[in-house]
Image (cartoon, rainbow, N blue to C red; front, side, top):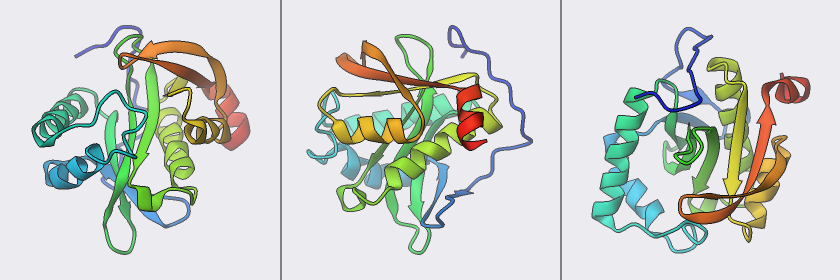
Amino acid sequence: MRKKGFTLRLYAMEIPEKIPSPSGRFALRPLSLRDQGDLYRLDSDVRVMEYFPKIRNRPESFEYLLKALKYAEENPGLGKYVLEAAESEDFMGLAVIQHLEESGEIEVGYRLHRRYWGNGLATEAAGMMLDLGFRLLGLPRLVGITHPDNLGSSRVLEKIGMDYSGMGKHYEIEVKCFAIEREKWQKMFG
């Protein structure tokens, strides 16, 4: 499935099955069917989903999982990645690199279980998504979006080098939009 305004160019051999985080606290791995229960617990947590359009019940969460797996199959390297704890292999949350339906741009995002909030994991995971997008996939630009009231997520996007680019409508809600070009990322982190 080809999305408007985007051509995927893989500059690396293969994306590893597990990508260890720089801190060693977790690894990223592609979302899979075995994550159904963990994904439902994340999707049904009222606090985690506070700034999302809706909380998903079990059937909706399973449908979301199936769509995510199909998307990843059709878009190599893109999709949803599980943050898996290094020691216990617990499901900590998700990091994403995917098309925004409304614009075709590639967004990075994250969603963590509450017990993992406040210790830099979202910033580290989002930074890893930039690295995946720029270094391995050769993308020229990445975007991030967040609900205007979600100040924590705005700070995460700024910490990874994204600049505020205005308001927009994605996922049926008004959002703050951020973006970073590969050249800026290379100067900062490359």
